[in-house]
Image (cartoon, rainbow, N blue to C red; front, top):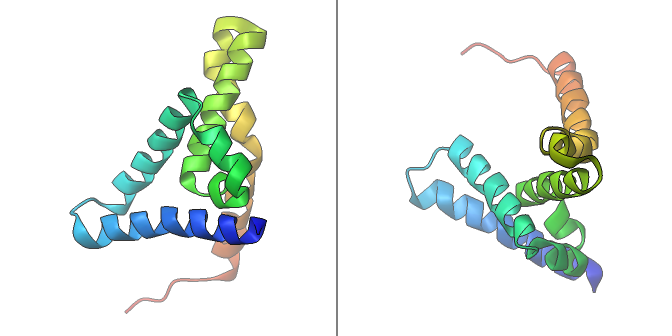
Length: 117
């Protein structure tokens, strides 16, 4: 049942993004930023954590989950380190995802070459 809910919630988040691409004039970059900011806002109001507990990776993996990780990292760092946590907490919390994206991007860049038309 966990897999089903992860698929439904993750799929719904992706479907909303696809609808935004298809039926609005928003660019993919603006949609990306909107998703990250939505995750930060929902994380700040403690709405996103119950969704992650319910849907697991279906809520944690999409861009809204990245925004939530940033918000939670900042909150925890401010609690432990004070004001400096505002600047360090988000990156510390999301460092594994950022590193993975950079490494896989490098690997794909080395393996795949674009072709001129």
